[in-house]
Length: 143
Image 1: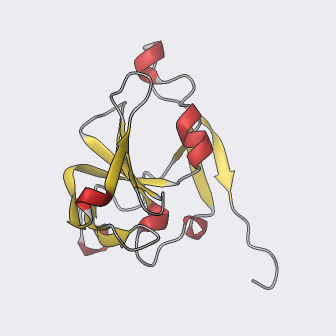
Image 2: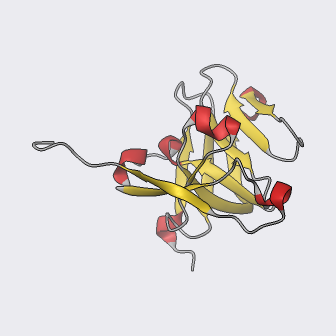
């Protein structure tokens, strides 16, 4: 069920790109991925349906990066380099939004983040997606 808490705004670091997003299921399906690109990028992502992201400003500032099969489209600000979202390879009808770009949200707000096995991608193996592990954030005492 989508409710008002699923409607968010966000943007890149320099402020050139601003967007509105309706998250498909809030933060229920947050994840990271072990594929070569996601491993280096390190973003925690939340899902939005196709059409669930509306660019409010800076669409001309967004740059798209594709690799390997070229199916996934990774969008980032051409000024500050921040990855804002991507169209997923495993389900091109979904976008994954970088939660660090959402206003008032930090990837450190989530104590446990599932990490999906992107090295053995379902589109390559023919097997269902599998979880490779969990990224855990534990606050230090006194923080």
